[in-house]
Length: 338
Image (cartoon, rainbow, N blue to C red; front, top):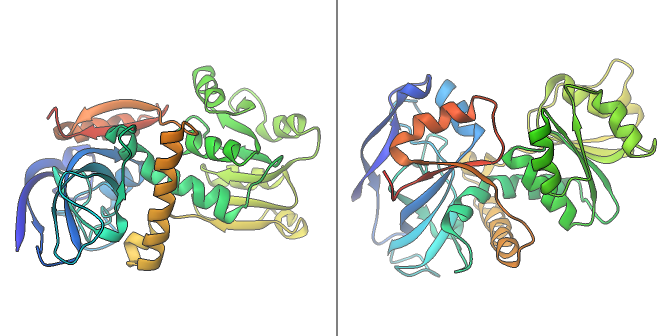
């Protein structure tokens, strides 16, 4: 069976102009273990612009519906799905890699084990905006690097959605945080998220600034969200036995073997792997992280800075803004105003 909705559908891989608002038939089995969600908001992430440009991980670009994180209201529950009822407020991170349709749509069909209830005190837009960045930050800061009280942490691109959330998570773990940013405005945003020092890398050498901030000790953890030379230069500021977590892929070591000689641990975090490869156990683990995000939002331990809201039909404009390098928070698509 199927359920007909409307969505932003890719005509092909390419620029924002390939995104088109069209009818979409979602595979929906009322006897299955999935939940039909009427979406209220969806997050827009750099992964979306990547898949739009080069094509999805699974299948062809034509017909792909982007978007991984969304929030909305349960419309129907499959007979073999448990824990949810029509009218429930929910959020999730699922789809958008070329197999299951993503969240740039009015509705989504979601495995029940990927869904999390949204507390009444949390706005659905915030729930949609936080999913991918919180899971990414938690996997990097807590699960991989094991950040704890008193740790010194460097977070690159500290004013972006991921950077602001990772900063807040690190602070919640009791760490001290320095970030890199490109401007004075972004420095203020990063400081507001909890950074102790926001380094304007265009005006000063970030490695020297980190060593000065850390009184010559260096940091225990680096979160790399820039890649390339930024990854390599970050190795110079790590304490021996430190950790670097990269979201961009690993370029290697410095010529003098800094990573090897310093016994540095290098982690790759690509939080879409469970969606891409259908890893049920890890999807359930990530849902538990998303539950933590809802708890933190409800308790005021973290916040989501929404930079801009676009109606669903203007998804191409949202992509143009994201690719303009003017990021200062999360971009959200809304389904009420389109």
